[in-house]
Image (tube, rainbow, N blue to C red):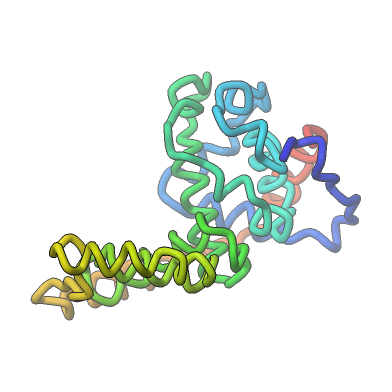
Length: 220
């Protein structure tokens, strides 16, 4: 899907989420997106850019302008292959790959990711497995991926799965760490820190958010 195929609808300022730029900026290194000069280097170097509905350059501009729904519902953030080509070439040294990863997390938390898009389902199931058990069980990850993204494929691959089980190459055992409570305590601390950052962003001065809007809206 090319960038030109996705038409960004005109929005009045009242329709925008002007807290979204500050929320994204509150993540580690997130404020670097304010240094983006919209040169398009990231879009030009991205090997998957031709398949994205919005280019990486436009995603940054839309984030700074407060187009939260469009950003979190886009396929662009899920097509990012984390190859870091954009981060290497960026003249402002913005960690665009990390920025895309944060947007994926936000989309999962708010439940707006494409429900049957394999990349999004894979990320969601991997996240749930590691959060619950501390490790990822590849067999269960594959089963849940097929069940949610393409149930028919699960039946098509059943014979292969049985052969792999007989040879010991496919196991239904759930891998888990021993001290899961320590992991859960750590994750709760991370969640609390993120919530604190979001509260700080919500209390930010309106004129600061308005400045971010004025900086970005001309680039879209």
